[in-house]
Amino acid sequence: MADRVYPAAKPINPPPAAAGANGNGGAPASFPAPKSQIYQRPIYRPQAPAKRRRGRSCRCSFCCCFCWALLVVILLALLAAVAGGAFYLLYRPHRPSFTVSSVRLSSLNLTSSATAPVLTDAIALTVTARNPNKKIVYLYDDFTLSAATSANALPLGSATVPGFTHEAGNTTVLTATIASTAVTVDPSAASDVKKSGGFSVVLDADTSAGVRVGSLKTKKIGIQVHCEGIKVTPPPPPPPAPKKVKGKNGTVALAPAPAPSAADTTTTTAATVSTAAHSCQVRVRVKIWKWTF
Image (cartoon, rainbow, N blue to C red):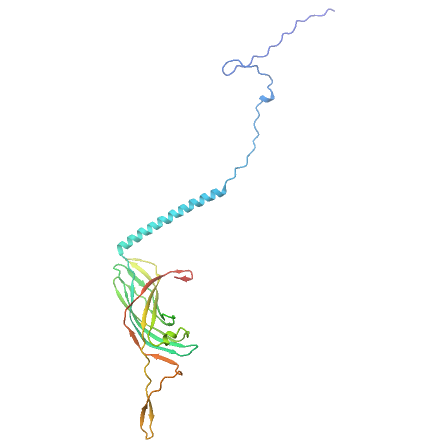
């Protein structure tokens, strides 16, 4: 059988390359596409959040808070200064004045014991209080008066004076008697009283005072009226009275008084008066917790 001859197969031309975006022909693309040209979606890998610098953030917050607080304090200080200046211009405030007009030592008895001397005394004094303001009224609570020697602070007694309302431009006279009865004192501190001649006395008056301007009242604060340099000069003790002595014939004669001996236990002085006026200082006392300044 004769072999049939078939015509040779025509080669199949590859499809033309797709036109580019600009209409020009491009290089023939291979099919299927190589692996390098296949689009691969990147794998999502969450990243840890960046660490914040807490030190710097806290420092900035502190600086901002400090600046605002400082600004508020400055504004409040300015407002207080403006209000204080306006109050001063309107009312011209002045402190009250206190003057000790007279001091009278009515009695002073001190035993001569070397270990525990006992003191009994009474001091009558007159204090003049003046309010120099024209529109400001002072409101006083009860006064607590106390006296002591200037050198050794020997306490001489205490007294209480009722409080009062001190009207504007008014003058008030206060009288009190500072006394102590049979009080044991320090022998070294009692040396001032035992000496002949005068000794200086310090007077203190503690109270609380408020201010009233029209219908407005302020809170009361503690004040102290301090008076020093008050000199008391007691006269020498009177001589003892002569004793009556019977004679041989029944007559009565007056014997000379014996001189005082060391066995005497009490030294007594008569009353003395100091009429010189002594100005006093008015101090504001501030109490912080347990301490008073």
